[in-house]
Length: 127
Image 1 (cartoon, helix red, strand yellow):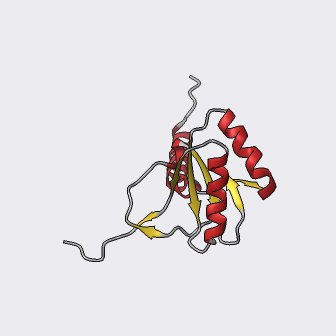
Image 2 (image 1 turned 180 degrees about the vertical axis):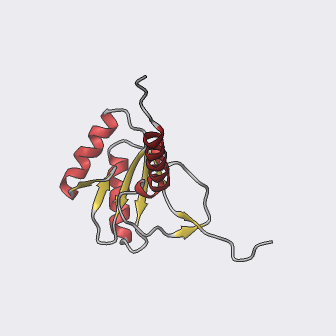
Image 3 (image 1 turned 30 degrees about the horizontal axis):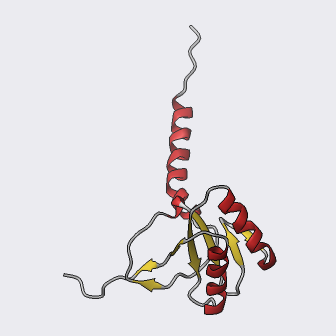
């Protein structure tokens, strides 16, 4: 009788599955930005293109670095591909001018639906 004992294989696979389930939420946001805390509603970032702006003014579209002179053409390509919604994740220490410049480029590309991603502000008084 030739049976293969798969008990140890199942044990190893279960451990790997648990490890991946625990680490997956930490891998979602690729660009390190410190979001401002405001009272806001929760949105899903996966519904649209996400433009991240770091505190030193670097711009990323969906985790890929974009040079300032290529931003207009990249946004025009996204618009031509059918993207209608853009979310901006700007570091709280990014300059207002940089953020407004990026939003202006988005609007100039013909994408009118622009949202800002922030962290939810926690109420200090809990009942």
